[in-house]
Length: 370
Image (cartoon, rainbow, N blue to C red; front, side, top):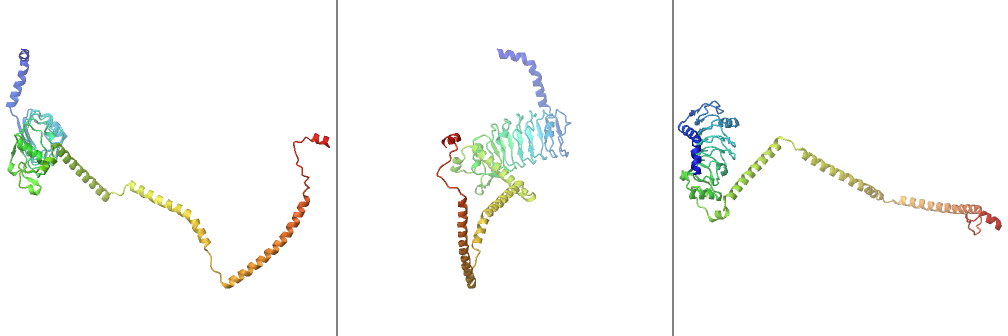
């Protein structure tokens, strides 16, 4: 009873909204700007536009374009076929709540950021065909819960994990270099167990390895090792992401290294290291020579002699005998002189009476004793 009463009370308020929705759904306002050589999305279009075709232009879908698209919130179909779009930024279609068809085929899209499809709750068909997409994170499709058709034909995708698209009815995957190793097992299981239809299944073939090129990605036989090696899609997704990140990091670092080695001189760290090594070597050599040179000098001096010849030896013996005789004479004279000098000195020394003078004895007492 309460709910019926509430509906009756608020029914007049809901009527205008329902009539507006019915009118907008019935009336279609279409603008065709194909092959106009536009580089930007026009900002002077009627805000009531529902179908906008901007195919075959030079639009890049930059920040300015995304802000212009926010004005056309009644859009149900948007076509950007064969433009210059290279990246789908986050929240590129944020205000297009009524959009049902989005076609960005034949562009140069390489990256689709997380949150690029936020706000597209009513999107039914998404066309990303014939771009340059290498890898897709399946989580980017979480906002498009009502998606029925997904076209990824003609990209560079070799691995694709199970997308969380519960209501998807048709998926197009041919024209990609699929790697049918164990990493594609989860996608095959999803294609075979869900209600989704793989369009052109017969031409959606494996590209790697060579032994499996004759198989479709939906019928390729997997051995027991794949089931034990990759039991969950999460581990495979993490492995692929880590492998791609490590490869890109290695390639970028290698490119930077070669570029720096070709065009830039060595950094200051190398010069500092060389200077430290040279300083240490020179200092150690100086210390080594300072310690060892005096020893070597004395060693050389001690061995700086030569053998005497016969006449030199005779002369040396004569000199030595003469020198010895002179020393004996001098020693005799010196002995006599020393005795005389000793006697003279001894004569000046007073006789010792055997007593020791005590300075602490009182002089008065000495006089009394005397």
